[in-house]
Amino acid sequence: MTIEIRELPADPKRDKKLLRDFVDLVDDVYAGDPTYVRPLDVEMEDRLDRAKNPFFEHAELAAWVAYKDGRRAGRVTAQVDREHLRCHQDGAGMFGFLDTVDDPEVARALLDTAAAWLTARGMKRIRGPLSLSINDETGVLVEGFDTPPMVMMPHHRPYQSGLIEAAGFTKLKDFYAWDYQVGLVPPRAQKAHDEVAALPEVTARPMDPRRVREDLGTIMGIFNDAWSDNWGFVPLTERELEKLASDTRILLMPELTRIVFIDGEAAAVLLTLPNLNEAIADLDGKLLPFGFAKLLWRLKVRGPKTARLIILGIRKKWRHVRRYAGLSAYLFVEANRSAHLLGLRRGELSWTVEDNAPVNVAIKLMGGRIYKKYRVYERELA
Image (cartoon, rainbow, N blue to C red; front, top):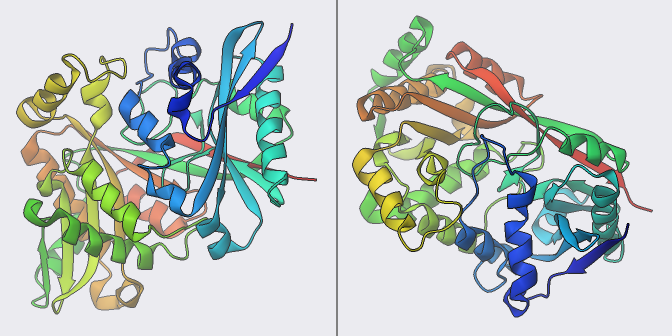
């Protein structure tokens, strides 16, 4: 039995058959998995397109498809992100988009290929899966296989983490996704919310659909400040922010967002997105011929029942001011109220790092429970 590894060209569309195998591999890996949601093909292809994805303005990538006995059996990418290296100076190259059949030889062949490519570019260690960076899909699913993934979160077969470990990788970090049932507000959180709401210098508003780019700039400014000490943090560039604004415009529900001002200065933010995966679960990745119409109807007419809180941040200058200690609770309660009015039943708060005790404790106090865990692995390079 032979394993063949084929590399996609720099412009993946120059080899449409290989690109289709890279995208369609999930049909083989996740066949029969009732919780898998196939991403939209156009979104997947755009992420690999150097001309469309501003990630490539500060990164380079290679992508491969593995074949065993002539049949596609796995895929992987390798990335060198100069922004990550500038921020952390740790010599870490990344791998991502790892999906394989349950075969240790296939997984090792792909990961060794990615490792060799990174070694040739001077990297000291290989880390992942990150598809494509810490600001995208992070980790391999290790707990919580019985529920579908939320928007912009990964999903894997239970065997995938074991194959990574068998290829010589060890755990680096775990990340949590928290389940939250809309409507459950502990009295302590409500009290903290009300105290903040009563402060005369504190005002809040949702994002304005007429100026999404401007408001996302405010949100990202707070995000880059509030998250700058988080493990693996890499700030978004201006062009990545513009693409985020374009990509999320159709998803944006202003009611699920808040920007908090203290004496007129943007101080804290909450960004929640409706769960796109709920709307595309039966589209098999296709928007044509009828997928786009179904998507719009489900998002804008029927309305979603689930959502994902992806950003909650408070600028450092306000974080430890006793007067504003209840800002996180204020944002949680506001989001819960809006979700209830919109008819949402549950939400996911994700992700958080396993050793970020203050954030994890706060979510637990709000009634959240960990229901999925994702793991990032690392291996030293020779």
